[in-house]
Every structure is written in C-alpha cells, then in structure tokens.
Image (cartoon, rainbow, N blue to C red; front, side, top):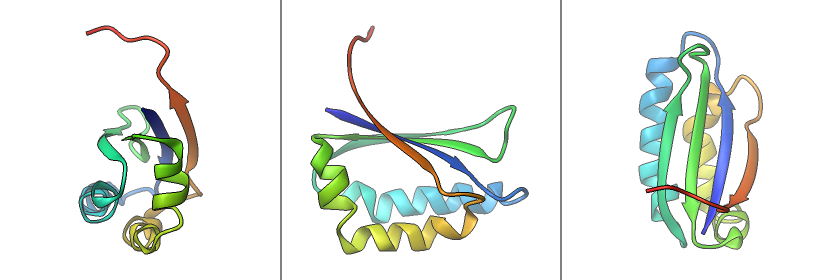
Amino acid sequence: MILELADIRIQPGKQAEFDAAIQRGVAETIAKSRGYLGHQVQKGVESPERYLLMVRWATLENHTVDFRESPAFAQWRGIVGPFFASPPQVEHFALLDQSS
C-alpha cells in the first residue's frame, strides 16, 4: 500500500466552496480509479486555507500512471484546481509502523 499525501493551499475565503469541491472531486474521480483503497481529507485548524488529502493506493503506479495519466486526472483538476493558491505539494509514503 502507498500513501499519497497532497498538501493543498487554497485561496482565502474559499473554504466552504472548496470543502464541497474536494469531496465531489474525490467521489467522482479518485475513488473510481484503479488501485484506490480509501482516502482522508484534513482541514487546517490554525491555517484554514490548508488541506491535507491522503489517498491510499494499492501501488505507486496506480496513482502516478493509472490515475495521473487518465482523463479522470484532468476532471479532478477541473473541479478542485480553480481554488488552489499554489500547486499542491505531493509525496508518496510506504508504511513503516502503525498502532491499532
């Protein structure tokens, strides 16, 4: 399992609109993609324009190839992209340890 972590900064004052857009975008695009295992969206408390999108993928290629090179990626960016203050910072992680 690979964890994609996207650190998203949006334009100030757009939180309510972005809340709806990111939920719709995930449901309509990412969640239907090959290798999608689940996700979480976290909103910043101290920084209300900051969001963390965490998507669990079966493999790295499910994100970098199957999703990013598909029409669904353009659809995703069309839904959430207009809110971005800057391009999201995206990294991938492999699980080392966890508790229950």
